[in-house]
Structure formats: structure tokens, C-alpha cells
Image 1 (cartoon, rainbow, N blue to C red):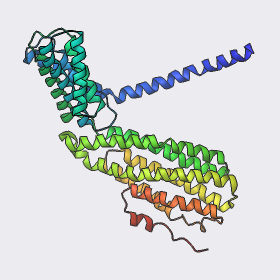
Image 2 (image 1 turned 30 degrees about the horizontal axis):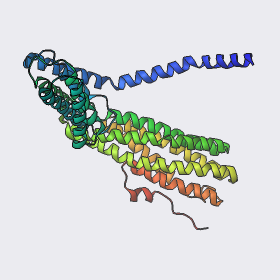
Image 3 (image 1 turned 180 degrees about the horizontal axis):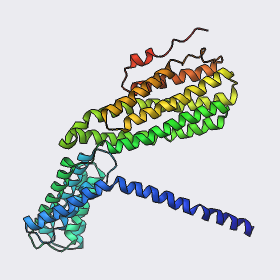
Image 4 (image 1 turned 45 degrees about the horizontal axis):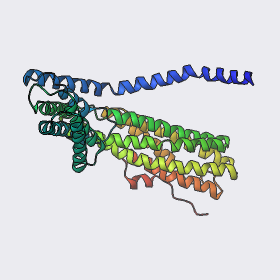
Length: 385
């Protein structure tokens, strides 16, 4: 008994280095992704502090720095400009409300409670956002609890305005490249989707339903990746349409948005396909020709998805078009083979698999920028029994 526990303990300890390595790698990647925002927040906070101190003559304008800092913040996707504006208004209003009420009520604990209650209720009246409410309440209660400013009653309100204006200026004029985050998310999605198809191909080749079930699990895990891409694209489209620095990227981001719409449909179809594939491999015996054809189709489809991913990952227009052309040709080649009888499929269950692959391939062709009609024209007509 003791020996078994000791072995179990040693086994757990053996996994510690790999766990630490994974955590370190994840943290390092997260830090690199947030580097630009960290620099942006630092410049906004320090810049707002210096403006309030040196131009306005305020003493220790900490609210200028905090307003700039919380207004920018770290945000994953979302409507970035709206978020910055929302936090800025909430932060400034909280300080204004605090200044007004402290002037009328004075300092103290019960005054802090009154100010906080009024601020929170006013925030809920003005906006339903949780961030808006939190910032307004936090800033107002800080105004009451901190010592009075020696620069006058509304000096801290003016500091907050300076901080929020600095945050908005940096978010508008020097935003992060709107293509970077969606590209990274798309790369993850493409990798998982390609592996899903490759694993499905191996499942057919080995006639192993367990591999098909593994592919289905992988497919279900792709939905958060799709959602992440869509969320990031909302922010990217907002930046590309609003910021003068990145308006030239509008077409590329719009093309990426178009591609993700059809890629999402294809990924959803793949989950249906893998679930059906697992059942077929469990209960039906496919002919050797059918197994070979389905294996090749799924493997070639996996390669085509990687080519599509290469197109979406590059920034140079000519390179992107070259990869798109390669992906189209590979997808056209797959589409033109999707006729059950010519693939050696003779069972109803096998035909159902081919019929599930057909719309998925059409979606992927449309993701490369081809029209729906041209995509379906590359599908061979179904032969009558």
C-alpha cells in the first residue's frame, strides 16, 4: 500500500517539470501578445500624469494616470473603442460625482457609503455595462476616502478628463495592428481543423472508430476557437474603419471576415461528419475501394485546409493570392471526386458520408473567395442507382 502511494507520488512529481514548462510557455506567449498594450497603457498613464502636473500645475495627479490606465486596460477583442469610451466616461463621472458630493457632504465613512450608493445607482441608470458601473463606483469612493486635493474641488475631475483623453487618443491614433490577433486565432483554428480531418482520414484507413471519436472531440473543441476569431474580428473591423493608421487594411480584414463565415460552416459540418463516421466504422463494412477513396479525400482535404491557413496568415497580397490559388486548386480536385459510385462506395451509410463531405467542401471553396455557384459546379452530378 505504502509502496503504491510512493510510486503514485513519484509519478506526479515526474510531471511537474513538463507542467511548469507548459505554464511558462503559455505565460511567455501571453506576455508577448500583451506587449503592445502594455507599452500603450504605460505611455498613456505617464503622459497623462505629466500633462496634468506640468501643464495644469496639479500636485500628484494620480487620477490622471489611473483614468488613462483603466480606460485602456487589457481587452480580448470586443468593441475596443466603445469599451475605452465607456470606461473613460464611467471613470470621469465617478470622480465628478465624488467631487460634487464631497463638497456638499464632507469627508467620512458614512459620506463614502452615500457617495458609493449614489454612484452605483446612477451608473445603472445611465448604462447596463458592468465595467461602466464598477469604474464609476470605484473612482467616486476613492475621491471621498483619499485626502482632499490641494489644487481645488474639481482638480481631480480635470485630471480624470486628461487621463481619459490620453487613452482615447492612443486608442484612436496608435492602435494595435488589427490583423495580428485574428491571424493568430485563425492559425490555431486552421491547425485544429486540419488535424481533425487528418485524424478522420487515419480512422478510415485503420478502420478504427476510436480515432473517429477522438476527431469528434477535437471538432467540438474548435468552437471556442471560432468564437475567439469572431470576437477578435469585431475589434479589428472597428479599428480598421476608425483609425487613420490602419484604414488601408480594411479590405484584408473584410476578406478574413468573409472567410471565417464559411470556415465556421465547414467546421460545424465536420463535427456532424466525424460523429457519423464513428458510427459507420462501428457498424458497417465498407468496400476496400471506398476505404481508400475516403482516406485520400479526407487527407487531401486536410492539406487544402493548411493551404487556406497559409493564405490567411500572410500579409503580402501576392503571397496571399498565391496560397489562395493553391487552396482552390486542391479543393477543386477534392470536389471533383465526390461521387459515391466512382469512389467505390456501395452502401447507403458510405454514400451518406460522401454527401456530408460535399457541402463542407463547397463551404471551404467559398471561403477562398469563390462564388457558391462556381463551387457547386465543381461537384460531379450524383449517379442514379
